[in-house]
Image (cartoon, rainbow, N blue to C red):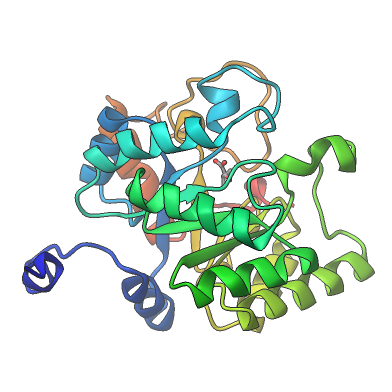
Length: 275
Ligand code: KIV
């Protein structure tokens, strides 16, 4: 009955929320990446990533929108279910899309959809002080939550664009306070996007849960990148934190394996990827 119990004794047990906490405690870097379909999910899983995120970045890299705002709940569930079919080992996290968590009840109903229909193990929401009661409500209903701080792509029309966050002293102090408050509200994981490397390190040291960074410097407990950036699929100007892992690899799986090795070996991110 308890398949997970049987798999726990195997050479390669599935990653759980406890694995991530143990990795943080042991100082082992956590390698995370996005995926949006079953084939790439199986590929990144086989390449050894610890966490697969079905990100609402799919609105940009799959659907061709300029932002993540148009992504709907039905689309997230569809892609999450496809990814879940490809993942065997990694921990599966999925984004709650724009306006899908504007009340506690809506957040709970949509998280349940991601878990029951999509197969997600954890939901991620773009968070700050205004989302504390939602995080508390979800965790009190046994839902594992990742709180996304820093650059919040769902808010770009309100904040005026994709910009590094937390550069000013006051904004940095507020982000650290928010991170601590979200942890106290029950968040099991934090994700920091596009902030100065020093602040990434300060927040990581200032909380007890694992912290994953994207453009947040080398001192977070792990890194995440959008798969299509790792594989250099998207043409044009890239954010500073992106590294093309395809350039020295013969194929997609080797590129993702090189990314995992660079995260684990702390050679990515290098100073040129940091703010
Ligand atoms: O949607 C997404 O892919 C994300 C990552 C950029 C962290 O949130």
